Length: 551
Ligand SMILES: Cc1ncc(C[n+]2csc(CCOP(=O)(O)OP(=O)(O)O)c2C)c(N)n1
Ligand SMILES: [Mg+2]
Image 1 (cartoon, rainbow, N blue to C red):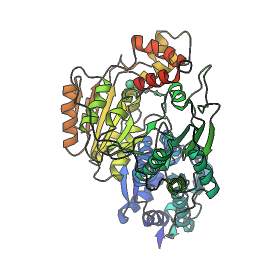
Image 2 (image 1 turned 120 degrees about the horizontal axis):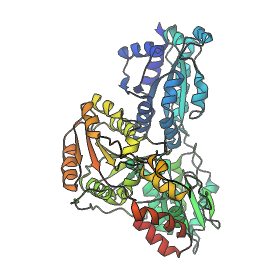
Image 3 (image 1 turned 90 degrees about the horizontal axis):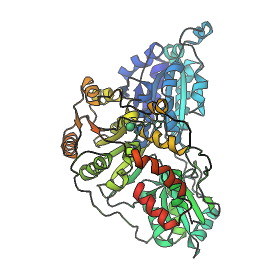
Image 4 (image 1 turned 90 degrees about the vertical axis):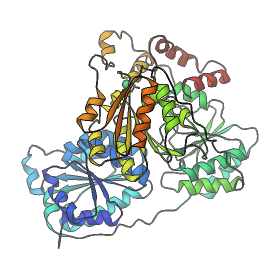
């Protein structure tokens, strides 16, 4: 006879959900106790946003869900921003949310709250297990829903008495994959478009076709038909580097994105959302597909994206076409006073084989793609939902799922402070993560946004809301306070040495890279004007400017 918690954990581990990112409380104590008699790896996180971001990073690399264990509505609420990023990333995840015993809920005890309302924002499958006998079956369904296409976050609410009660039964989840590919007529219609001479066609790749198989297929199609390849702005996981097709990413700045997309008459989208601007700006477009361009989708999220793109390769007779692969090549090691571009150059120069990059460098990471394009093959994980505080937690999950793969995470100083507790878990689990904080003592991007939105009357009070320089943040002291080796770099030489050390020694390291903001003074003043004219100048000139600003 098993209690509910044991049946739940066994159901999870039997289905391969063998890693749980936790921040428990009293209502989860039976789950915690049951860990000892299980094969579940439990990873303590000191803030729920770390747990949920880590589960996201884990799923991106492992391509299977991790579980989270969170404490009632408040714990779930603390984890919401990174659950939002995970939802936009379309990764699988199983949240276990402990709740009060069913008979206790009527008293409105201090931690009583509406868990379902919190969960609904990020999770379309939500269930409260109301009987111990049912927990196993509920958990199996939660795993199936999370794992099968379209992958998503499922949320299982576990009342304490259901967890401690006897009569739990282990249930085997059915993980038989769904393998339906795009309908034949869709594939042949898109093949016709691609093969029509004289029409300018672009293909926007997203989510599941950004790994080797999908990229090779896309490159064959492009080589055969002349179509231009793009990837979405913030990919869940992009494989790149020497020996893989190199694909241009759509820019974050919508004015730049419009320039990239201008002139195309057909846009074939494969497993991505249609390109829209992150925010509305007065007088600017929100929907970024050019007016005369027709949008076509190859697959919907519950179809097999890789199988469908391969069908498209056949339909355009490109099976034997050679894909265009990126040559190996790295930037030189930088020297002199440190800035963000030099950090990117050093990363490109020194990145080890098979690395995973978690990129939340914000404005300081503009040159990262170009500096790492010819580096050894690697994965890039990005800020899919725009809710910052994601880079460090995602690095935790990626390091655990990647087993021996080295992880490098580049984070803005502002972003790092949302989930700085991540450093503790990196140490506690001895993860091979190199944390690079791009410390420009600013919410620099918001200075750009302030200019872009045309807000008037912004004076010192307004600017102080975007400024982190008055009270300087010492990331070295914070890392050391959690036992992590850390050093500060103000010159490129210091940075190169620190990065070499961090990469060569196992375990976590932090480098506090002191850099100026990429856009300040005159450059900051000029940028909005430049962006305003981008749509009005000849396309080749605009494209050249785009390459210079956001290569
Ligand atoms: C959860 C959440 N809160 C606030 C924001 C708004 N926001 C976007 S970027 C940013 C500051 C980023 O600062 P930093 O990481 O230092 O990067 P920098 O802009 O300096 O390059 C803020 C506060 C957000 N996107 N998500
Ligand atoms: Mg900053």
